[in-house]
Image (cartoon, rainbow, N blue to C red; front, side, top):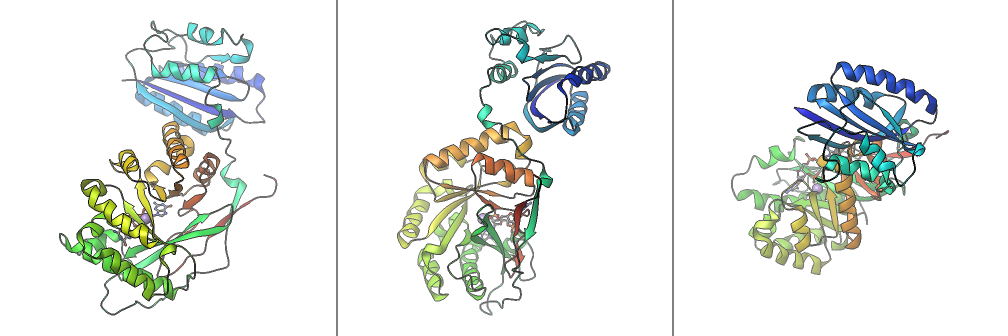
Length: 406
Ligand code: C2E
Ligand code: MN
């Protein structure tokens, strides 16, 4: 199937512009053999390239392009299918935007094309050309330094392990993972993640319950979370705990139970953030928001977890605004390479900024993901890059430090 890929990237400082012609000649030959055609735009700093041809060949060539050390910050903008090539004349051709008059440059680019329709039919690929040529969206081209420009240095505080379980009738334990502001070097909250007593996943713990029993167990487990937090001497530190939304709806007195356990363990409601996964909320939203009112009246803050993973993301946000949203790892993964993820996350940030909702990125594993998200305006992070959850304890945090020379 005829596949199109469009990406943009940033030329490396050490690449002389005059070598580009040679690079394109080589690419032209190579692409020709693979039946891949396209065009490469250059504006003195950024490349913008369209590749089209049989899917497998386009993907292979794109992979090589991503590995090319002459450019960096390669962001895939479009991957799509089309009935005909738009730039079918040559394997690769370079078009230097600086050599053309600004008013005519877009037309000059389109004149290179082989598609009959040009911009008439709102073709997304050609619209990307217009945006690049007119240098719109440029404020969203974040310059991300290479991953090795940072060291991640664990702080001195080591894991505090071996906290005794709060009561003998409990069947669960918790792992704690920090939510941090890396540049402020601040732990903003600790999230308690449920485990089986031997440290297995939340799923294995949930699997031991049938039907609605899970809600009562979920609620009761928070008693253990609070007791462990107290035993870990978290002091005034914020504590995030997860709850199924239906737990609040189905268990009478759930909010009172939480309040009692918070107080019993010497904590205050203001330091607690309850995180809810969106999927289940929407079915009984009225009852849920009723419970939320009680929580808020008691001083407990609320977060929507896994934002963007379920079907209810934006419509839920329209009806109910939490104090924080946590963007799911599915959207975070490789955000520095993906135009669609970047656009979605920028949209989420914009909505949340207007609504004064704080945004946390969850599941950050790579320095580049973190750097892109910081540039986009996020300052709260949770992920293996900084700290993995520690069973029965609080892990050390690996804080980023800029290496000398970068
Ligand atoms: P969550 O609330 O989004 O918690 C974050 C999950 O992402 C944790 O998985 C954590 O281990 C994982 N994680 C954190 N950083 C990274 C990373 O950099 N890479 C990757 N791949 N994963 C990362 P965990 O502990 O398995 O928990 C899974 C989910 O189970 C939680 O997702 C939460 O929705 C649910 N859960 C945990 N504890 C409870 C609880 O007490 N009650 C309820 N109802 N749900 C809970
Ligand atoms: Mn959570």
